[in-house]
Length: 159
Image (cartoon, rainbow, N blue to C red; front, side, top):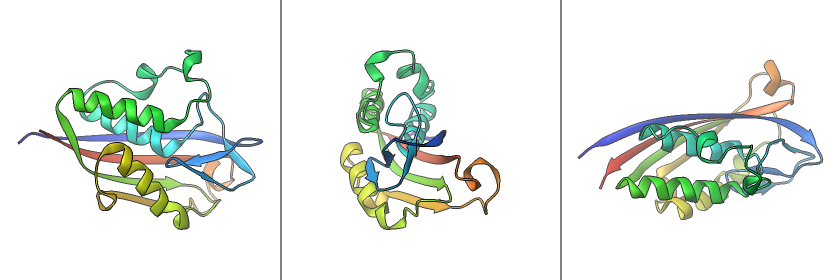
């Protein structure tokens, strides 16, 4: 059995006047992430991890911000399209481990819903997905509430 590990990372600014999407879930907050799509950093990091595991480039190569068909797109669609690429290569997901760095909003109470959304798209069990959050202790852009970052590791196996 062949295994492949991928790592993904994504950053976005937080700004007033945008919805806050994380892990495919709209979270009530007065700011949202700025981006060409809905700017869901967690789903973007997972996409990059899956693509990286199979040396398929990155999310920007597959869904460029210069392509207006991806303007304001729901990142759950991008996750599904990325998963379709993984399935075409005859791989499936073993597990996903993620960390989101932000001061606010607190996301722990939304983590189960995010895991349910991601699991449904990726055809895995909710228990195969870890979503953790941490602050940066008020340091850097995330600590000042100017933005957020998500990290993801994905383990794939050949079917």
